[in-house]
Image (cartoon, rainbow, N blue to C red):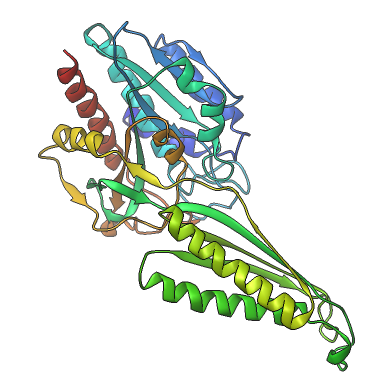
Length: 376
């Protein structure tokens, strides 16, 4: 078994959720300590390595480390040993790639002509650990020139690298809408204010208007969770919709916000009820800096590459790094129909062949060496 495969499979067995990645933290520290690197933490479960070559330029490479709160159904011999936890988004692979890259750095330490910052970041899936690391002073302590990150991607063939300049992934905001009505017997609806009715109208009207907006620009507003009422023959006094907004520009975000607030006011007037719209702070759009993207293309020239035609409506907190430092985020394909590796990210059946991860390690090495050539 290769070292890369060992790292991925051992990490796969100990998935932990946001800011609870204690075993994962210790595993990473143990490997890096064994390589002679000094590790530190800005939060509690992050692991940071700064390789100081007294150079003018610093290059950062980031891996997320958290898992998801779900049961694993892959049946593999190295499946999760933590009930209700799984690396269903491939972060075990991300960590394995960065640890293998650390071995390369150790072996080539004396020839490094740039400083290197390795970031093992907690809480990508839920809270946005990237922002918390930045707020804790990561880039103030270690000013950085470029930042790179990888995500495994089961929607393109194994070993293919994919990305695009400019917008790659969307801004992601969570949304909670509460409806306050008045309860009454179900046989006497005229005596109540039906919160479920308000919620259903709100959902259908918002969907219709966002669909029209989406014909002109790429936006999404979807509600994945709805709750209302307590008993089948009582008019619901309260209802809640929970969803997500995905946009790329401030203008598009404001357009969706306007739709939501307009429907809020209309329903309050028509029903004499109360509607509260709360949009939670979310992730910024992932935006690949165009000059850094050109470096990325030059470094990987000749490798199997697919440039995405349009940005994706999924989100990623790597965007917070890019708001501070020019960077590129890219995908490594893991789709392999012959081996059955076709399940989507966040699926309880998600799996991959570790041979795809070597593509990511090689990409990091090529990026480092290409930037080093330009820094002479």
